[in-house]
Length: 166
Image (cartoon, rainbow, N blue to C red):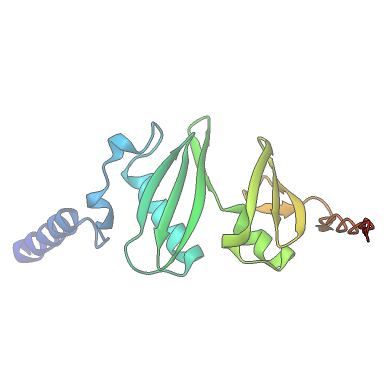
């Protein structure tokens, strides 16, 4: 009976030492440079979400953009995520460009975003623009029809007669 108890205690200690079987990929991240709200658990969650969104299973490189926004870079792509915390509950807001790619028929790298207010973002690219609203489930919802950007017609070249002298 003592051998069984000893083996259970040893197995439990082994799980604690190796982190319950999880990966420690974020050991190279300096959290003191990553903003006031980030910690190891939140970063691990961000890394998991970004790896899924970016379809990248190599180590991602984080960059703090300010105002709780983080750019995750890897596999020749990138995504921007925002950490929002309300009364101790924090959620990662995904990159609106991931949703706009489909609606605008445009590559993520060609899309430009403009924050209109706390829950509304405008996205423009490939001659189109749309507005997205953040839902309570923390996903982006198209909030306007996709509009074609009006391109001004080229001004007709006016021909000025050249006087001829004989």
